Length: 179
Image (cartoon, rainbow, N blue to C red; front, top):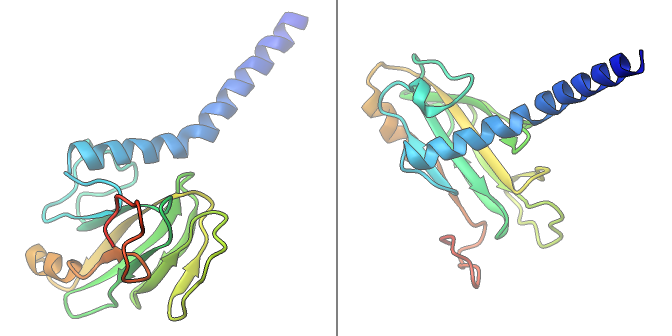
């Protein structure tokens, strides 16, 4: 009887650990694919001009939607993600999420300038931004586009205005990330 209870307890703990870690493992797989298959890296933006494929390791992606992907790291300080509002070319819908795949910003057709602050940040917060404090340094966005036309190159040109930057114009001393 005791062995049966211990076996059940071990089984349940194993299942709980797998379920608990699944979001983080999925995000880690996405970041590996971003580097290896898409030529991206931290604090970069990748624009798809063709449909996404299973080798890109996005668990919930579909092959009918143009995507824009950004993986950001606030370890060196705050970042701004500037997403354009809806236009005659495209609208964006998505969420920004932390390393646990917990969404903390819903991005809609209005766009915006999103200031992402690192955990524990107590510095100056400039005006004019939608301010968010994600629970982790790693933040990612998989933006789905609703193009007004099926001409993806035109939509990709519109995506070119999605970018990240430091909230100030100065480069942070000792940082390997552009200013």
